[in-house]
Amino acid sequence: MNQEIKQAPGCIAFIGIASGWGAQVRETEKGPEVLYKSGVLSSLHIPWVWKETLFPLKSSQDIHLPSGVLTLPYIEDVCKRTALSVVDSLQKQHFPVVIGGDHTVAVGTWAGVTFQLKTQQKFGLIWIDAHMDAHTMETSPSQAYHGMPLADLLGYGESCLVNVLEKGPVLSPHHVCLIGVRSYEEGEAALLKRLGVRVYYMSDVQKSGFENIFQEALHYVKQDTDGFGVTIDLDAFDPEDAPGVGTPESQGLKAQEVLPTLTRLQHDPDFKALEIVEYNPERDRDDKTLSLVRDLLINILPNSEMMQEIDI
Ligand SMILES: [Mn+2]
View 1: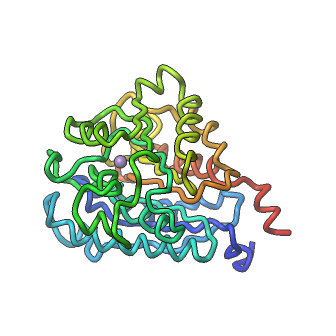
View 2 (view 1 turned 90 degrees about the horizontal axis):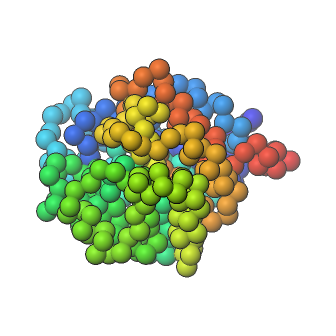
């Protein structure tokens, strides 16, 4: 496939975000480059380009910083550049796929998407995660920013993370839902409850099955919105399927059940961007997590029929 076809409208633009500054364990900063260099993306039968890998001004190899406010300038900077890169991809009519790094990058990804599509607070988001990521500095025990991006996107948090490209909030609580939650603290749960954010806990998935829950979630985020996106924190999966993550939690989603269901995203014209975060290659075993990322991409992104359309 030549470069011209690769760059055609509709092609996938991967953007790697090599930052782990939002987490206590920072090895997720290695995720994007390991994925890119592994060659697993060559098994995608669609036009794609690795647009760029964004590195923070300093990596955790350069300086040691405790979690919290000292890491904020690095996070602010990398989120802003992520947002601008996503904007640029959408301007070229590419489909952005953001690869983390820790989950703080969501602040930049979805600010960029809603800015370019002019869909602030009219955009749906499915947030697949073991955690709620809805802390503020006041409620977070760890002070790690990757426990806060959903709150930031809803307008609660540091001003520089709430208002990345335009005055926030980026998302409305009525167009967001979480799936797979099983580890959270009281403060963040109270915020989401107060705002009326829909949460599908892991117990709901076990009771109704992922397929039914996802179907319902999809319907919810498409209602009264102008497009929707999906953010996948790999820790939503059971550590058996995804050992290589920043913050593993037992009793998670089963890849076998999730993957076939996600194919319904493939040709949905309202689906505007994808984010996959928290891949920690240092903790992976037998490349299980790397393979899961590949399988997620194969199942979610348009299949080879789409490539043939573009080739013609
Ligand atoms: Mn997360």
